[in-house]
Image 1 (cartoon, rainbow, N blue to C red):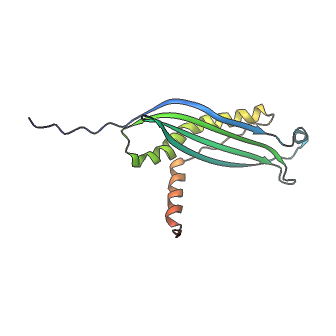
Image 2 (tube, rainbow, N blue to C red; image 1 turned 90 degrees about the vertical axis):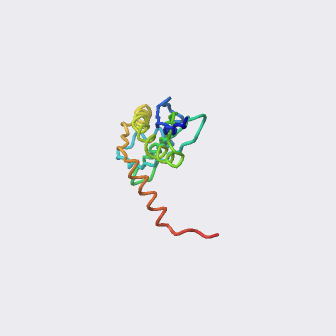
Image 3 (cartoon, rainbow, N blue to C red; image 1 turned 180 degrees about the vertical axis):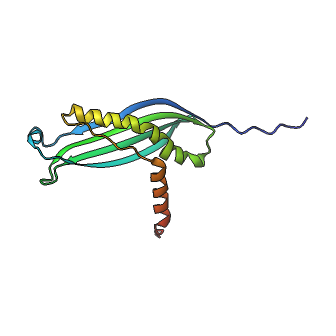
Amino acid sequence: MAEQPQQPIQAQFTIEKIYVKDASVEIPNAPQIFLERAQPELEFQFRNEGQLIGDDHHEVVLTATVTAKLKDSGKTVFLIEASQGGIFMVKGVPQTDMELVYAITCPTILLPYLRETVSDMAVRAGFPPVFLAPMNFEALYRQRQQAEEAAPEVKH
């Protein structure tokens, strides 16, 4: 009896849980800052990271830091940092492709939740809502790859 060739495992991806992992608001110049009438400038920074947390379960965290400063005085109006986490079950995806899951697939899912968290935090702190723009995580990943390939290798 000839052995049947094994069928490749079908890739599976499931969202197990989405949650706010960390959130903070700082208003270092309150209450006086609320009397300012100038429109603050917003600066946005993002980072994401992923890790295996159990059999086929991965945690991915997308973090946004939003800093609002007054252009003329340089005073900080507010600083919001929020980390949106997700637990994802990923099966049948080659280890070499997990970087794409961490850098593109999961952050794309988490961004709408992070947008809502940041906006809600700004409103609860007494400011107008802050809207995070949609992001193309695939384009960001490709840009980062190209920059790494273009950078000269550092020799020790």
